[in-house]
Image (tube, rainbow, N blue to C red):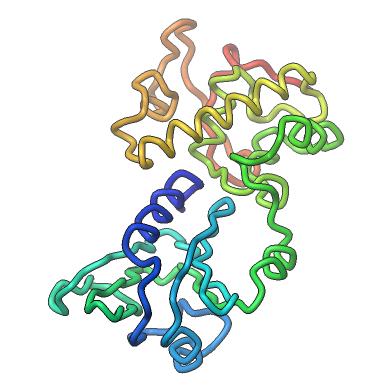
Length: 263
């Protein structure tokens, strides 16, 4: 599932290819991923419209249209954007594409059809309706601490809770816990304020690095946890074996001696 950095990369791609181009035609091949209307209504709502800017909140990308409406792109596991010029370059699993008045096309490719595409009249109302939390790169330190201190859930669960913090998924949650030396099953309310502030700072630093690297994992630092969190891994300092467990419903990797448990 794309997390905040991956969706930020999609946003840059969208901005660089589709903004300020009039949509001359919408071609829908399969409307299963269009969740709130038929393919015909989707086509009607977007034809002759122009995407004027975009907004990303967590894992959700909104393309804002010239009539005040928004196109929501939630990529699921396999969603992707493809900008091309010739019909023969159409992606194999394209579900729909926009034909712009300059003759180019922007296609949405989704082999497994897990993406969610919605055409919204009011973006703010939708965000409120799904109770989407503050973006993980935008949340202030004081708000992060205030959200964590009364909660009895695990810190891993808090980081993954999209109603509290939008955009963090399994990979980055484990990375933050490891780099801050916090056991992922630690109770959020038991973690000292100083350590919560460290978690906030490290979270945003990790996400910014990932965004700046265009979510290309090969460009991430070699000493990041993600690069070597494998079943047989030993910690380079303590020599202890890595452990794996389901935490907050997700497979989590950690070193119990290296990462302190707060309970």
